[in-house]
Amino acid sequence: MGSRENLIQAVIDGDRQAAENLAEEVVAGGGDLKEVTERLTDAMRMVGEKFNRFEIFLPEMMLAAEAMTRAMKVIGPKMMVGAGIQKKGKVVIGAPSGDMHEIGKDIVITVLKASGFEIVNLGTNVDALEFIKKAQETKADIIGISTLMTTTMPGAGEVIELLKEKGLRDQIKVMVGGAPTSLEWAKAIGADGWAENASQAVNLAEQLL
Ligand code: HCB
Image 1 (tube, rainbow, N blue to C red):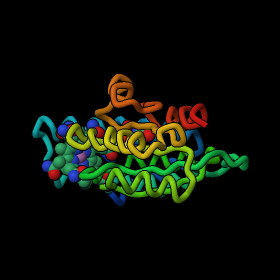
Image 2 (spheres, protein in one colour; image 1 turned 30 degrees about the horizontal axis):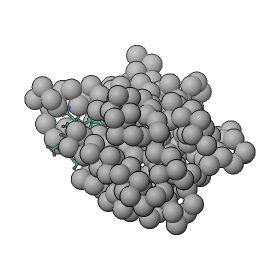
Image 3 (tube, rainbow, N blue to C red; image 1 turned 120 degrees about the horizontal axis):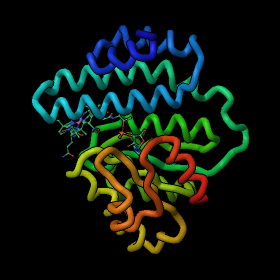
């Protein structure tokens, strides 16, 4: 098995040290780091499916998440190399109330930054009002919402409703994403766009400007 396959396996196995070492090998070996990131994303999806089938439990899911985070700490900065110097828009991004998942959001942030976007990272468990306050304060063009649970998806709709209430809906675009979300759902809540992965998120953000 090559370093890339080993890295994917190390993340699935939750082997944090191996994931970090193998990520370094993968980076040193060159190649398309966006593709590696997408394969790692699929691996995390598999971890979620195993969790669903009771083949693994929360501690194992946490180890896999930590292994993924360690790998992305190595890969992320290398994706920034060659970052577009042309400055684009500003995106305020976070996960809504109750949602602590941040790996996907952080990958989207890395790729947006690498494409020239300025980012305000609100982190996880962000109140709907906080998204709006920060977007206004920083004069952001786009609010990005990353939601990983069906129970926290309504938080994205809340942000859009609050923007309308405050008469700000025309001034700030909203893009949404996260594993359980879909284009249909994004349309239903009145978002300006949905992206399935980080590369699509960049294309979308560029279109929304
Ligand atoms: Co978590 N978890 N989890 N989890 N978790 C999910 C999300 C489940 C689907 C697993 C399952 O049951 N199959 C499930 C949610 C079910 C549901 O919706 N009803 C679930 C659950 C239930 C839970 C807990 C409740 C478990 C418990 O405690 N019993 C708990 C809740 C914590 C909370 O949020 N309050 C929990 C905890 C955890 C951790 C801590 C162990 C860990 C998170 C660690 C961290 O983020 N620091 C975790 C993880 C890792 C997952 C899975 C396995 C992977 C998520 C992930 O990182 N994927 C996930 C399974 C799954 O997603 N199918 C599982 C990789 C990233 C790269 O993909 O989809 O997030 P992504 O992002 C993509 C894409 O969607 C898009 O671009 C990204 C890059 O390509 N994108 C955007 C993302 N955001 C975007 C925003 C935009 O504007 C545009 C595009």
